[in-house]
Image (cartoon, rainbow, N blue to C red; front, side, top):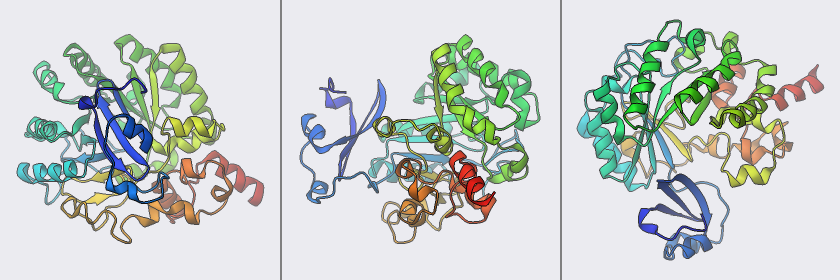
Amino acid sequence: MNNIKDTTKLKYRFENFGGIISSENPPFLAFVDRNYMRQLGLCQSDIWEIDNETIGRLSAPTEVHFAITNKCSVGCPHCYMDAGKQDEGELDTASLKHALDILAQMKVFHIALGGGEALERPDLFEIAEYARTKGLVPNLTVSGSKITADVAEKMKVFGQVNVSLDGVRDNYGAFRKKDMFAVADNAIDRLIKAGVPTGINCVIGRNNFDGIPGLFEYAAGKQINEIEFLRLKPSGRGMEKYLEQRTTYEQNISLAPLLAKLSAKYKITAKIDCSFIPMLCYHNPPLEMLEATATYGCEAGNVLLGIRSNGAVSGCSFLKSSSLSVFDLPSGLNREGTFEKITNWQQKAPQPCKSCSYLNICKGGCHAVAEYITRDFNNPDPDCPKVVQYRMENHG
């Protein structure tokens, strides 16, 4: 990024450590220090008057996951939103636009729209276009249903559209228990033909883990350059069979090497969500590499927020909603007690996290998993391989 000269194409936000800069073409988001901001010609900010230049609590999230409807006719058994019926109090078009106004004023960079099935909301494209006018980059995750050739053309408004695809052919139904592979496959073809940046979201559990190589081969054939692997979460209907469907210890420790190998073979970017960071850290990657690539674990309530279709705000989409509404932002974001138990977790981290060199990267793993399995949000992620080994060594 040393070659960046034209700041007119950059979006930026000042922070105590310097600032955050973002571009859609080429796509990137980076945390930079104060000197770098000055080199870009971005003037001194009042926020720099404080001496602390460490990266900690941000002034606002960089990304918000906004489930704009809970309506969904697909009804997947593992749905983390328990989607199906419309939420009571679902925001109408005017209210949703007002919510986007607030997020834009906070200088949020990306809005990940979803549901439910976002295409079951008739004003989806109006909302996406409005987000564009406010300087927000709207992205979208869909099941693939309802994507006709005409709909695919309209999806050019989005920065990227990801289609949920948990595997190829039989592996598709590992969680969904229905045969919609052809539907998702046709949607991907239509999006690519329309020139829409298209990716795949793949939820991983023990039953479809062995299908990961086949998914890379499929994506390469479609000329898709990105797959994001999401850990199955005990949220919504996903709680019902979570314990029998979650990845095994052996799968968890083999995930990162497998994705690295397949990514290199097929020239496809493999991303993991924040809940898989403990599985990456198990292999002791260089800390400086993780920091340079902004690879972090739980950033709920800080880098990320989740918002339901009725405006209720949570630290992330897999955690319980707080008492905060999107209309209480930004003043309520840093209100005492709102997200402190998440954002200050490292300060009171128990063992083995307390002594782990990756504490400030991993942040204890997925706290939604910890709360579900151990009944205590403050416990470390019980599926972290380092935690598993620690307990075996100390408790047999």
